[in-house]
Image (cartoon, rainbow, N blue to C red; front, side, top):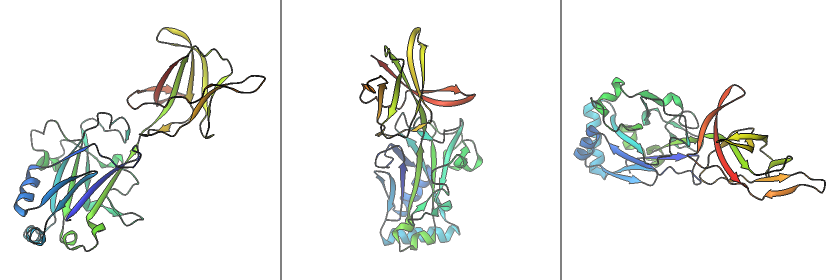
Length: 279
């Protein structure tokens, strides 16, 4: 293995980001072809392979250039919901630029493409930035990639004996939203949503008008809840009575990705995931 780049995401249960399509730029494609490098898609990214002769050809290219060879790859996310469950948000007219030349080792000795635990907003760059013109061309590619990955193939990389020095990682964080349950026909003034884990509390409003219908009970989580492919939240709807709490709904449904919006709370804009329940 000459190098490998893997992508992770906090949203997924196993932490692996699979919804990727990674393509070499035109210049990178030509360089890979001339050197005889075999590029292979991985479950979580890409990897480049070559025998001793291939590595030697790359060394010669590096020596001739007097600098590392920058191999640029265009990254597209194939999940239509990717940008909804991912932070940071993509600014209009910008894309992510990740470069192995800026990698740093983490506590486990892995080469990570950012100094922060997750990809941060500082990695965004204007799509029409001069540094991207040799990669994207002018006029720009359509559709434009969401990210450009640049792999710096240096003499140190080619001679590294420890495979961990040639394996790079990047990790995305998951977005969070406040869960908003809208119940129609609950009819219980003392109803409350209880977190069986005891971590989350909900504000309760009665008689809320939603879609022209009055009388909805609305429960809004006091804190945002991280979006997860498999959510472990266990909420119950209960009603207080002299004989003790009565369970109205044993397990409340979890929020779904793609069903959220922004609304104002205490003067601040928050991301809200709505869940409608008819009783």
